[in-house]
Image (cartoon, rainbow, N blue to C red; front, side):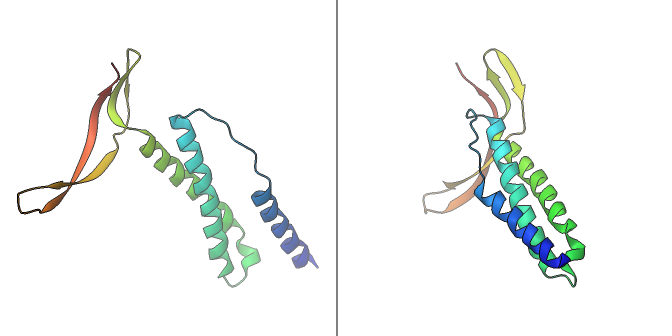
Amino acid sequence: MKRFKRMVSMVLVAMLLTVLTAPCYAAESAFKEVFQNAVYGGLTGALVGAAVMAFTHKPGDHLDYIGYGGAIGVLAGAAIGTVKSAKSLAELEHGKVQFAIPTIFPDFRDTNSKGQTALVFKAELFRGRF
């Protein structure tokens, strides 16, 4: 009976997490990018933790896998969002200089007249709006 109650409560929590969604209104900014990636990373990490938990001998004894997976996912998502939102090393905006981690962009370029291409990585070191 206790196992049945636990299973019903887990199904109910999963249904509530997927059904009840509140709209998130935010300006197009770095915070929105970091927050979205952290949320998606946490949900994905919790899902992976639940999948790993399902393959253990006694899944009921390893419910902490869901929490660990979610926590790792939030940290990874926030790191990815931070890297994606940072565009250049130094940015001049409204008279203020801001420093951030530059984003590295891969690019294909023609190297010679024979049509060969090379993979080039580039990063913006300075960006400004004039």
